[in-house]
Length: 204
Image 1 (cartoon, rainbow, N blue to C red):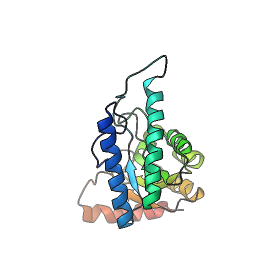
Image 2: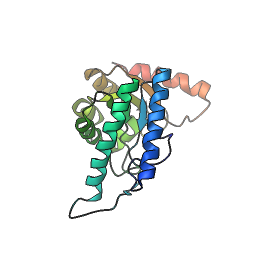
Image 3: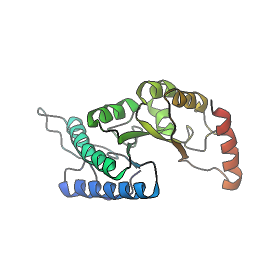
């Protein structure tokens, strides 16, 4: 995620324009190299847009702005042949989109087949009451997955139930890529083969 300048939900139009142009450039590159798409986080940390109550609070304004910008970006993703992948983060990294259900709501409003989601097991472990239930109920837009255990180490070092999560992904017809995004607690040439063996054993 990230990899571009600016901020989509900044009160300064220049910062928003920087983010939009940066994401568009990444979408072009993703299409050129055959990547699934571009993962983005709408906003790290707390709100930047002021609360305009009683007209609208900050979160309402952020969501309205996010939907409009994502419509533009999803149209561009469709034009170049890529996907825009919204990533929900845990509450300690963002205040806005933390759960699959919240990401699904944004994708529903954008209503473009090139606006999708990326699901991260680390963040889901914090935010979802039951990961596999959330995937089955709100995972229709998932096109890419990040793998990390509950302590953000390689899968197999924490308590995340990957078997149940993978079964839920299979149940919703997920056929995309899954990538490791986590700490490797030892020599990679030793740890990664062990992790691959562990993950294969969790597959349905």
